Amino acid sequence: MTSQRLSPFDIMCHLVAFPTVSKDSNLPLIDWVETYLKSHHITPHRCYNGEKDKAALFAHVGPETAGGVVLSGHSDVVPVAGQLWEQDPWTVLKKDNRYYGRGTCDMKGFVALAIWALVEARYADLQKPLQLALSYDEEVGCLGAPSMIEAMRASLPFAERVIVGEPSMMQTVTGHKGGIGFETHVSGFEVHSSLIDQGVSAIMSGAKLIDWANDVNSENRAKSASEIALMFDPPYTTAHVGMISGGTAHNITAKDCWFSMDFRVVADEQEADWTAKYKAAARALEAEMQATRPEAAISLKQRFYVPALRPEPTALAETLARQLTGDNETHVVSYGTEAGQFQQAGYSAVICGPGDIAQAHQPNEYIEIAQFDKGHQFMRDLLNMLEKG
Image (cartoon, rainbow, N blue to C red; front, side, top):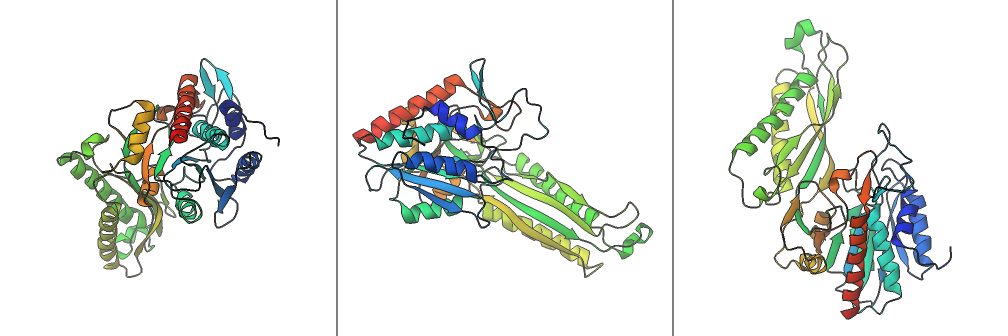
């Protein structure tokens, strides 16, 4: 690759062409980004997962001093299988003042803008540094960011402010719910269903734990919401089961039942408290099951943990985003992002990126060209600010 400086659109076209669905490797995309950055004498760093089939990438441009800005995005996208696309999802199509393609909105459009900005920064006289953070497995629980953030803290000068470019219509988002999920395995004891009192049905027992989630939602919905909770929709912590399986036959008490239990936690509550509540509910049900059959059990395996993004007293990243966008309104979102993970690691974090979250994960995903252009201007203004120090 030559040292040609590609436009944000050209970079986005390259990125979208890599089908980086979370179940697959992202290394071809990482290889391309690494080669492109090296062609401009930027040193990228990789942080692999345990299987070595995926990697995060981060880089630094500008003075070797603390106090810079991180542009953060993820490389993975959700699947297209089963969706009705009117065009090739892995090729950017310009149509009706929009760029169509998987990831154009969530979030290869922002990543392209961030890569463009990093390369432009290489040829600018920065007084404050700019960093890029590109993770993997965000779409399956923000799994790739923690090790990347740890490696960044160990390898690069500490950049105080992080802009996570999830699609926010270039609004400054200062809070999101936390998330925690558990794979729940209920183990029963099989007997013929005519002898139900001698066995333990994993499905019928598991249904009690699922109904506990219904009770949690009803109780949380009914209680008075805090000032912070009222910022979210819905304004309370929610419990949800999205998948369930188990059982052997219609006339046998189920030996096994598996389901996922996920919590979306408002920013003034703690994920750890909801973990403790769920574990207590599971242990109480387990004791009830074991009173009939000691072999019965409930096991919980944490599937993901995404800390909430909480409003900050110092608000360094928020102030920066507001200066660049002119947005002085209050915005929060109910979905989770890697911003909470950066914040937990000591960074000041904010969400601000082009595109509408309503288009994320959809067939015929797109980003409005006007939004992409607005993101481009944001990057120009950021570079100008970093040049001035």
